[in-house]
Structures are given as structure tokens and as C-alpha cells.
Amino acid sequence: MAEIIQRDGTWAFDGTTVRITPGLHRSVPLFRQTYGEIAVPLEAVAGVVFEPERKRGRLRMRLREGADPLLHATGGRLPDPADPYRLAVDVDRAGVAEYVAEEIRRSLLLDQIPNDPTKAYLLPGPPVPVSVRSSDGTVSFDGIQVRIDWADTSDRVKRATGPRIINIADVVGVEWLPNSGYEDGFLRFVTRETTFSKLPPEKDPYALDLWGSARRDLLTALVATAVTARLPHPSTRTGVEYAERDRRLTAAVPPSADHHDVLLRRLRELGELYRDGVLTDEEFAMTKAAVLRGF
Image (tube, rainbow, N blue to C red; front, side, top):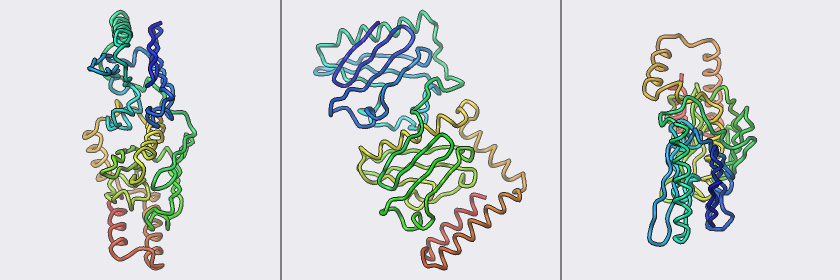
């Protein structure tokens, strides 16, 4: 067993699994403490390195592409201190950190772990149900449905439409950008109906606009990861190629009767909101155009 215990957390390696446990000190980011312990199988690891510095070093683990739904959902946008695959190491424990890193590297070599992308997620992501209260509302996921309950401070268009419930079967992707404190972030659930929607996050009823506490809003990555873990693995599709294929299929195949019904229903809902004075002329025109683009 190779193990290092620091105020920032603990890494323990038994030859097959790296068990990462966040520290309980107040300096440890809320996101890492909430995400909790992560058991990383050796086959998910691409490499590990210790980076020594004058006062404090860092252990960093690099995972194979496609192994972790957290890394896929966040797209490398997690702030460095919130990265669970990073451990701050006191200077007097540098030797232990080097030993842990070397043990993991030796096992990678002996077990001939490949460095190429994986074909399936090797980590499960956070357990469900999971619920997070953000600046724009509360988002919950039970493994089957995503539910968004808007806050009193949410845009009135969102509040007028009521809670948003999205079946996981209808979700084709998750987009997440953290609130940096200087720039707003968002969590958006892309569905078959909204693939081409261009509504800004503050008005998109399928998106949370993250503008408040960066520390609290960062927790929305938990929901983004839990949903991502239950979507088809990215190896089954490739970005531009997948989008182009969908565009061509959409253009080639006439809309089904179900799609027409959904479109008419959404247009009727918008018309009612407009007649009731909830939407302005500009908001109605912009939202209607986005809905039509989605079909």
C-alpha cells in the first residue's frame, strides 16, 4: 500500500485502485468535499506526476480520455483547486509523494495499461438522486428525470413556464460552464427539441444561469456529471461529424406527427404568455424564432 495523507486530502494505492479522499479542512473546496471519495481503477489512469515547488508541491493524476464522466461533463473547466485529481503536498512530504507517484507508474507499466481513449466510462460519477441549489434555481436528477425549480430571482419567462422536467431519454447532451465570479456560467440540458436553440442562458428554460456564489454554483457540475454518466459514451459519436450527421438526417427526414404536435403546443404556450403580457414583443419574437429553429 502506497499512501500519502495531507490536509488537502489522502491518496491511497493498493496496486489496482487509487482511492482519493478529500480533506476536511476549510481550505478544501466545497466541490471536492461534496463530490466525496473517488475510487480510480488503474486502467483509467494515463499518468501521474509530482510537481515540486518551493513551499508546496502537487500530485497530479491524468486519466485516459473518456474514462471519467466528470472530466467529460466539465470539459477541463474545473478551477484548479476544485480538481479532485490534484493533491497539494507539504514540502516535507515530497519524498512520500514521489514514492506514491512512482508506485502508480510502475503498476501502469507492469500491467501494460494503454494510454488510448476508453470506449466506456470507467468511473461511475456521483450517485443519484442528486440535487443542487444554485443562483438560478434548484436542479435535481433522480436517474430518470431532470427537474429544475426556478428561484424567485430567475427570469420571469422561466418562472412563467413553471418547473422544467426533462426525461433523460430526451437529453442528447449537457453543456456546463462555471461561474468564475467575473463571468456568468451556465448549465444547459440539450434535448432533441432544443438542439439548435440559441436562447441566452438567462432566458433558456432548459438552462440554469449561474451568476451568484461561484463556490455554490460550482456544485451544478455534480448534476451535469450524473446526467452525462447516463448518456451514450462520447466514443459512440464524434463532435462535428455527429452534428453534421444529425443536421443531414433532420433535413432529409420529414418531421413526424409527434414533432408537429410538440411544435404546435410550444407555440400555443408562447402565444398565451404573450397575450397575458408575460412576454414582451422582443422576448416573444426571440423565443418563437428559437423554437422554430429547434424543429
